Amino acid sequence: MNVFLTEKFFGINDLNNTIVKSKFLENIEMIYGQLVIGPPGSGKTAYCHAMSEFLRGLGRKVAIINLDPANDVLPYEASVNISHLITVENVMQHIKLGPNGGLIYCMEFLEKRVDWLIDELQKFKDCYLLFDCPGQVELYTHHQSVQKIVSVLVKSGFTLAAVHLVDSHYCCDPSKFVSVLLTSLSTMLQMEMPHINVLSKADLVEKHGKLHFNLDFYTDVLDLQELISILSDDPFLVRYKKLNKAVVELIENYSLVSFLLLSIKSKECMSRVLQAADKANGYVFGINEENRNIQNLLSCAMSADFEDAKIADIREKYMETENVQGYTSQGR
Image: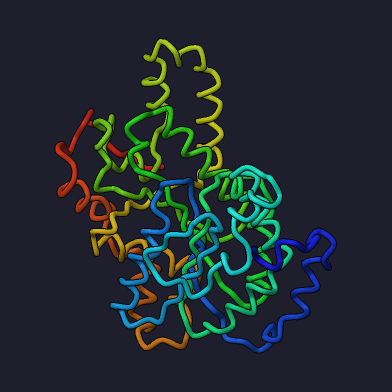
C-alpha cells in the first residue's frame, strides 16, 4: 500500500503554501510541455508514446509524466509516475470507492500533494514534458482538481498547452459529434489554458460509417445548422430538435472549437499537431533552442499550411470518397 494513502490529506496546508515551498519560482527558465487530456479510449497514451519518439527524432529531450493512477500498463518509460504516490487500485481496496470515485480521490490527493509532483519535475527541467492524463471526462469539464494542479504548475514556471484528444469516429454520428463539441467547449472554458482540440485515430475516421460532409466541415466546425437538419430526420431525435438547436447555437456563439486531424502513423499529422502545441505553449517563441529562429517563428505565426493541406493526407490515404454531400466550406 502506498504510504501517502493512509494520511488524512484533506487537512494538509492550502495549495498556495506549496508555491512558496518551491525552490525555483524565481529567475527560472520556462519549462514547456503538453497536457494530454480527453475521454477514455481517445488515444492519449499512444499519442504520448508516438509524440515522444517524434520529438526525439527532432533532437529534443523529452520526459513523459504519467498522471493516470489507473494506467498500470505503459508502452513507454515514465519519467514521473503517479503510481509511485497513489493508485486507483489501492484506493478501491482500502477506501472502498468505485473506479470513478477512486480516480477523483486520486486527483484530489495529487492536488494536495502537488509539491511532490513539482519536486519530481525539477529533475527534468531541460526536457519537453508530455503529461499523460486520466480519461475521466468530468475531471476536465467541471471538477476542479486538475485545473488547480495546472494552475500551480504554471505559477511554478511551467508553460503548458492542453492537447484535447477526441476519437474521430464520432464524426460519423451527428448527435455524438454535437456532444463532442459541447464537451470540448466545456473543457476549454474549465481548464483556462492554451488549448488545441484534436480528432485522433483519423486513419479510422470512416470505420463506423461514412461522413455526411467533407472533413473540413468537422475540423473547422462550419455551419452546424446542417447537423440539425440531419438530426431532425431521426424519428427518435426529432423530439429533441429545440434542445439540439440551442446547443448548436451555444457552440457557434462561442466560436472557439475547431480541430486538427491526427493519425500517429502520419508524420505530417504529428508535425502539424506539434506545431500547433508549440505555438500554444510558447515553445516556438523561446530562446534556448537552435531551431527556434526567425523563419520558424514566421512560418508558425502565418500558419504555413494551406487549409486544404491540413486534411488532404488523411482524405487521400484513409477515406474512400472525397465529397460526401457536396458541402462547400463557407468559413466561420
